[in-house]
Image (cartoon, rainbow, N blue to C red; front, side):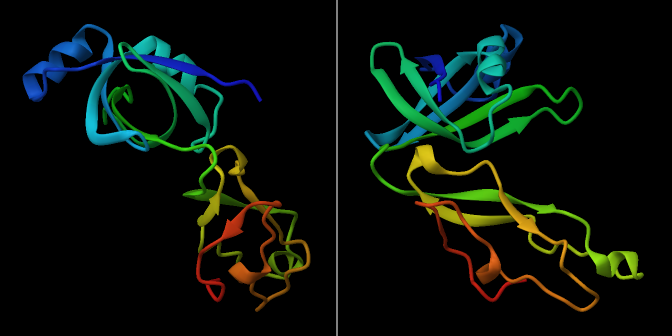
Length: 177
């Protein structure tokens, strides 16, 4: 898998006025923390570069963050905030990771197939839309798939019934439905 590089600059100015000015200049303020960072580092990234880097990648992808004057470090998106009206990205939190150390991540659960119980008048209720897994940053799956084609009315699938890829550990309560 190719590694996408995001270029950032350290940001010295913080506060509402400073970040508003950055956004008007086509930049996204953010912060990076985690492995190799004793304190969170405020950063700024060109909005168009960030949009193109994030496009087509899942939420748990690993990127290379190239920080001016600090070098490169692998990161994952920890949080992103969008403007409620325009949906533009207005802030991003990046978590620096050690590629040899497992991390926790929330992964979507996707139902595959058609449950016979639904055809008989039952209702399919997906209670868990995502589950927490632990894996090396590069091994986190895009999704965990569950086959529902054998579910009849009254049947349940528990977390313990889900199958994760090799190297991925589901760390959620196994009795959850």
